[in-house]
Length: 203
Length: 203
DNA sequence: CGAATTACCGTACTTCAGTACAGTAGCGAG
DNA sequence: CTCGCTACTGTACTGAAGTACGGTAATTCG
Image (tube, rainbow over all chains, first blue to last red; front, top):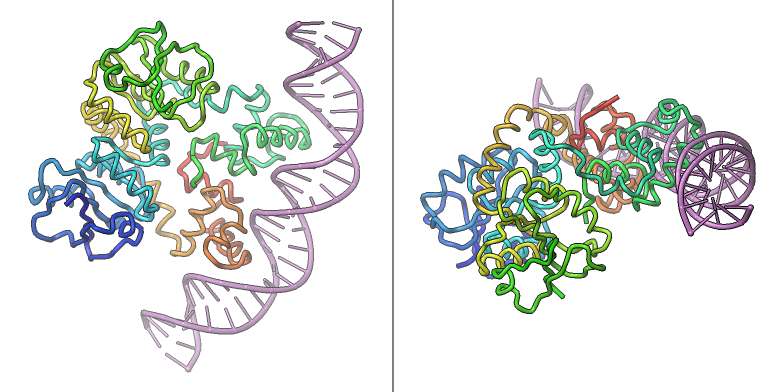
């Protein structure tokens, strides 16, 4: 049996069900589990480490774990991976995505999702003292002044505030903002801030 | 063409060659590159960020990058991933491993190798341990519905889009957004998104 | 020199966000 | 049963964001 789905209360995930129609679902405290990939739906407050540790003796040493979370967050992802999981993704993900995850982890890969990855990396990179000349992807298309405005927008400033900060008219701020939206393909300043802050938009 | 192998001096990798006999190899500074997976053999002293940034405009935005290193190290791995690579592995790896890496990254996965992964995690985990009260701080003040709206706003959706997503009227979305701004002390939805996305506040 | 780029500013306009001030309805606690 | 909380909706309004025209001045580059 390749895939098994486990949850605490035998809750079912429709997306998962349709991704792997032939697979089995069960409860966490069940008898020995044998599968290539074991999917775990954990409640938000649960500690992945404890659960994985309790489960490990009842499973084959070479099965691969994927933790599903309804509200993924960085900390839990780290905890899950540290506890031996090789995948961490949103429980509401589309069936196609889940199948992709399966392919990846079965082949020895690691899946933590694009969104988590970015945040994860930005945090880590800063903490490790890496020089932050990294996300220059957006930077090199922009002029110096546009970068000033971009930073201010990304920090949540209004046009009026930016105008005061840079000592230019509000009209000129709008001018630069429009250029930024155009160059970076954003619809409004919020999406602009997501791009600049490295938060990818969802599909 | 699915795989392309690039290096600075047209050096060849036998392992890679036999993993993908049909694929093409070339030099870094070549004309536009189009491939699903682009393999990059970088010298130890090179900065992955610089090279990837220089290369990015000449490639399709949805190609996946794998950086090969003769002497893999944690810092370079981080730099490569931060610069947009989705794989980092030893250039001397066996063909079977390389094919596995290809499968993983083509399916949207991330490959950084078992050894690096463990070191990586232990470092990160320790560093992140301290500062963790922030992410769920906003969650427990909010009702279930407010959290739905909060997530959508943070992702950059407009009121109209959220209304469609949640199947409620635009007016109700505004209602929830106002409650969110009040509860979380944000001035507008941009600041709200910064709070929810965990982007630190500056002046 | 002309052309392109950058930075700057103005008025007028449309669209959206957010608030004010209403209201209905369900549900659980005291 | 009333009180409080939550979810939902409506109309009307203000102000901000963003666009569409317009313009001047300085710089670099072929």
